[in-house]
Structures are given as C-alpha cells and as structure tokens.
Amino acid sequence: MNPRTALTSFLVAAALGANAQSTFNGNGNTGFGGPVGNGNLVVANDGVNITFTLNTTAALGGNDLVLYLDTVAGGFSSTAGFNDAADGGRSAVSGFSGSGQSVLTFASGFSADYALGIGNGFASLFTLANGGNNSLTYNTGASQGGASPYSLTVSLASLGLTAGQSFNLFGTLVSESGYRSSETVAGNDTGTQGWNPYTQTSFSTFTTTAVPEPSTVFLSLSGVATFVLLRRRTR
Image (cartoon, rainbow, N blue to C red; front, side):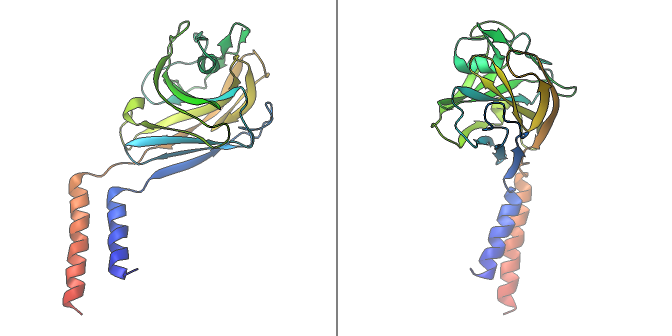
C-alpha cells in the first residue's frame, strides 16, 4: 500500500474512533455441561450499536444465557418480583415457572435494568419489570441457529446509553423452566443449582466507544491533506 494512503487510512480511523471490543470468560463451572462456564461473551460496539456474541463449547439445549444489564440509574436489586412465565425466554429471565423459582440477588453496585436472553432459537432484549405474565417488555430480538455463536445487535439508545458511557453486565445460564445453573459469564455467583436462591458475587463493566465531535474529524482530515500537500512540494 502507498505510505500516504496507509497514513490517511490510519488517521481517518483514529479520528472516527476504533470499535470497542471486550471478551468476558465464563466462570469455569460445568453445572449444565459447561457450554457457558467454559465459553465466553464478546461485546463490541461502534458508538451507535452494540453486539453481544456468546461463544459456547456445546449447544445450549433448552437453556438460555440471561445477560442482565445495568445501564441507567435505578433498576432492580434482585429477580424476586419477576414472575413472567409467558414463554421459555421470559421464564429464564425471571428464573421462574410453575415448577419453581430461583431468585438471583445482585451485588452492591449492580441494579439490573434490562435482560438479554439468548437461547438456541431466539435472542430477545427485555426491559425488566416486576409482575406476572408479559410484564417483561420485549424490545427487539433475532432468530438464532442451533449452534454457537449466538449473537444479537441492539442500539445504544435502546439500552438508555450514549456513546462513551459505561455499563455493568452479568450472565447466568438458566433453564427455560427457571432452574438456575452454576454457570456464569462476565462475573460469578454462589448458590445451589436448581430452583434455589443465588447471590451475585462479581460482575463486569464495558465502556462504549466515544464518537468524536465533527470538528475533531474535520481537523484530523485537514491534517492529512496538509501532510500530503507538503510531501508533494518537498519531492
């Protein structure tokens, strides 16, 4: 590649901001066979949209990764009031069904606002709310294949975020009957697998990409143009 072309590309990318991306590993537990405990979650964004990609070591079967997101002020300190069992995905988010309930209590500093449920067939983003069937507000979703990776892209705005902000996240593997496993990603918890209470012991934080002001981009591109002109004059 021409050196000037390479420099131009580099400076433009720097001006616009590179995509932020982080990989969060599972906690190593294998309560449901280890698909999440031995897997990882990749979070990436470009300042406008954010993509969550779950890489598992085996198929999820009838289980969902429930990724709780703390993105705005307020939120829930536990899942105790979630009793939405209108479908399998909602049961997993709630940790509740006619068979039983597994209440997850979040650690200090984490208050859940949204939940992303990723299963074999579908991935859905819900706004959290206490109540019974259909109390969780469905925001968006996408069909999923039967094998890893599983992925969903949503806008920052749909999570109440703007570019450059940080948010907390924590994922737990739950049966679509609300039966909670010991497998987590982007954090950890304690509890006895089943329809039993769990307590979050750690979580992770992701910082989104800041989008520069138009003036910053203009100045950077102007600098490229000036450099190219000077190089031509001195040759």
